[in-house]
Image 1 (cartoon, helix red, strand yellow):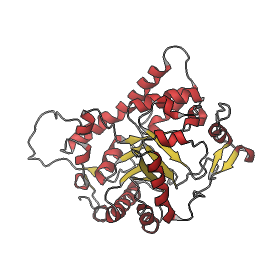
Image 2: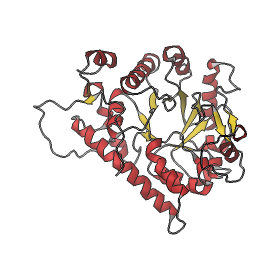
Image 3: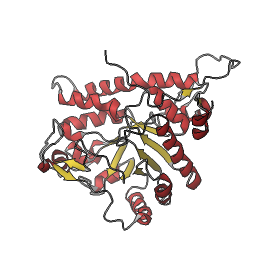
Image 4: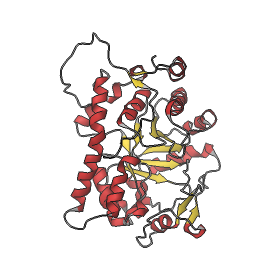
Length: 349
């Protein structure tokens, strides 16, 4: 049996309710709140950077449809799925990555998006470069359904990834870009992905553009675990609240989060959490696909099982804190034995 991942935030605990709290029986409300009960939002989770180029486009399409049915925002372009118009697939929770180079991006991706993510933060590849693999770029350029079974090693197998959109003269021009995206799709939510570094210097300028969401990308920051990870989240939230209270903070953790980590991040104030590691078995299953039966149903079942394994524990932990919904969690539901950490994070001791 595979071992469970260690908690990223193991130095922080969940504080149970006081001993004199009356027992009220099983709660009747959904832990996601009223909106979920009415068929609205799904779990506050998202799939940030799926490696679609590792699997055939047709299989990627089946996986996207399955995860979208669970109302999990998923990063995808039409070209990732071998489609000239992603709108034909009728997805409802697309997280459209707007990369500086705009590889693979089409107008239909922006028109059909639930969220458009202007990715100012990059991640290094397996060789340590800011680069894309040749297979990935080929897929984005609408070439054959080329797939990649292992990280590229030869110099000819990679393409450099720029770090700043060339159409933006400086960060002051970001507001105009977000307004342009909202003009293309008036209902879209605009996100900006940033790194966990230089928060005090760079984040205020990003917030001046009025994004709906700030995505804190820590999947390229192995050192950001434990108290350091929590401290970065708290610092980000303090800057956001000081400059613009309406922006949500989404977090891509540095490593696989446990259900316990998710509840702790929700309590700190995080609005949604990246679960790329949870979804990786879907990619693995796509590589070993069985052509018999209904692949759409098979992927939906697999995705549901992967999600339910964690969300059942998330639900139980939220209830154990003495609240009925995730939105009712706050830093007062967290505790640490260290007075220094408690003061740094604004939580109990």
